[in-house]
Image 1 (cartoon, rainbow, N blue to C red):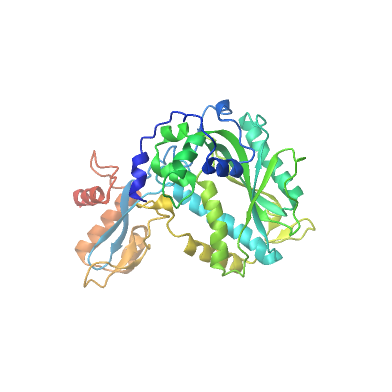
Image 2: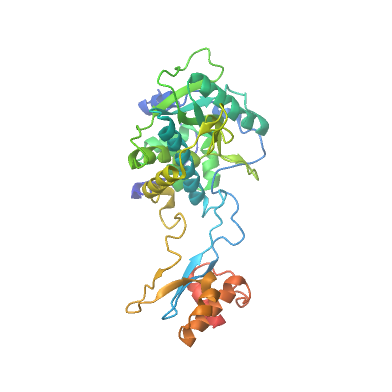
Length: 396
């Protein structure tokens, strides 16, 4: 993150004086066909949420003993992850996992059915058409039907309730940035500030395989259709570059999808040949579409996970999982021991005799993890590794 971005922490949100449209304005207008007027306000549910601006799970962020060395008693601590899309700490993990699954689905279809072209497009409802929560979700199906008419064989639909305001675009275009505008917004502003920089303008992003002769946008289209781009060609199940391109598209779209507060519906919905009931492992009916073998899916998933890496939103520790193995060599110098998963301690002790002091540490961690031993009052929810080690000292 460049240092220059820090000057935008407290933006002035007053409307600028009328001027001739700048080139940035013209680019923004061309890139947002179907955008609504900013002065329409917000509609639908009383509150709509962005990923990561809601509630965490009850144990999220609480540290616990994860692994214990069978020789020296070293304890690896870890923090619970709830994995919720609403969680400020875990939403990036949710987005990454969902994007990997979506990539495996799209690329698996391409692999089996030899589709050269996968397209990203948008469908934008006419201003005022989507004014309620029910209409917002019905619009997904309508957008998918329109995409199929254009030539999509099947598709994923990711709904976006908002667009960014002209003020936000001006600020974004005024800084040196190497990320999309929504990633920039999430990094630079708190939720109340973001709400002042976005407005209700629901639209639907479409990603899926298409025919080579797909139909372009037309003035007769009921809603505004826009072709964004074709993703990179796929050279096989191990084509990491192609998988990365599809993954990156889904990952960015999920950074600013939205839903009514408390809603649990999936953020990615599948239609046509990629629908859950159609794209199946054992396609025996004429209307069913064969999935690739488990081996092919595993290969695509493995390569996608390798290229996913740590995305911009995850810099600073918000990684997918904890980055540690359940078992492995002890990190202590000159130890030579092996880390034992705390949940496997009871079974391990039935067949092995570690030093008495190590066995005590192992048993204490096991009892704590199962809730049979409770940390002292005021220490029951350690929020850092240091606090968790303090709890262990008290329990020992």
